[in-house]
Length: 109
Image 1 (cartoon, rainbow, N blue to C red):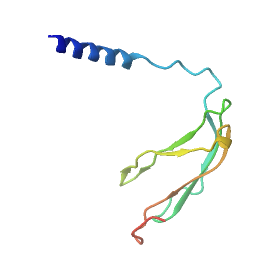
Image 2: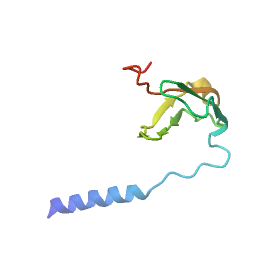
Image 3: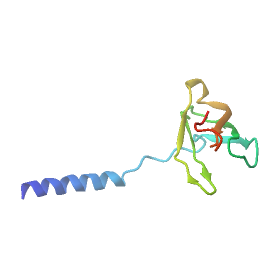
Image 4: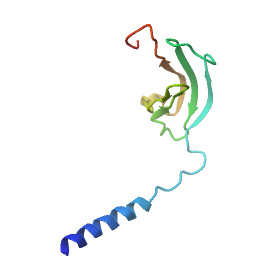
């Protein structure tokens, strides 16, 4: 009885913690992508895709960028996280490079 009461209390505590959320960010403090474009519309197997990006964060809390790729005929690639150095957390200009799969090579460069 005492053991089941303890498990019920633990379950209740975990359930209540799941309902707690962080407060919303004040307006104007979220990172914003100001410009983004890709170097080509469609790529062949083995081509290198570059996604040029410019992003700003007024507070300087932009410490990583998530990239997600869906490929027709293949499916969904897992999310890739790019961590930024401290000097780029306020303003970032650069590109993300994705090396596509090639049937002519047994490894990706």
